[in-house]
Length: 261
Image 1 (cartoon, helix red, strand yellow):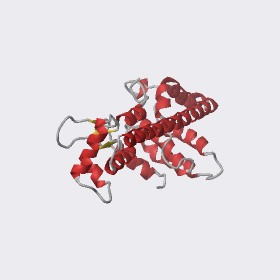
Image 2 (spheres, helix red, strand yellow):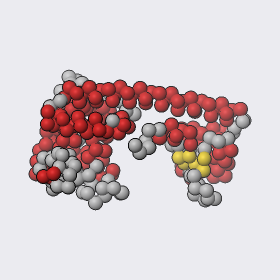
Image 3 (cartoon, helix red, strand yellow):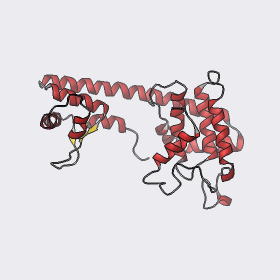
Image 4 (cartoon, helix red, strand yellow):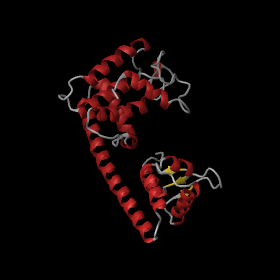
């Protein structure tokens, strides 16, 4: 999918469709002034461009992101593009979330990533003050070198953490596969375990829909029961119907570092 202003607006529309920001023009560039910090623009830490300049600014950013393909380092383009996006602040809400997603989308678009596996949000959250300070200092002092050093360090740190997470998840899958083998698990149990490696939260109905030659509901339900008895999955609802099973240790690994700080 082409990285474009239309795609950015569509992502914003999905992100803000419900919950926080759902009343702040989801999927549309802002038509009024916003600001960062303070109760009004005159007291704000930073005031982005006026609303009537947003389209022009975003158009220039889009041209930059597509310029010099193969000549400008994708990481450099992502670092500079992120600052420019946050400086334009084109939406009334959700700019931080979209700006961080933009980094990953750009790296996928440039072919650096085959899958969106590098997401800098955790690193930026852990270094929030430095991150915000550097964004502002780039605007006021032009400290691009300091920003690039911070950004590239974040990419390296996040890549190392992602590789370590992937290794731990593979070890978990292998350990549980051995546990299932030792317990003499049936083919249906092994198939459900395989599905849970792709979707770590499933209902019996959803699991059935993912199987080409689907067994019976009772067979799949029994498979989930076997996985629960071995401590591999946990039933989350506590009910007898519409039960949701979670691959708890897998989710625990994926969730590390996402707690509020």
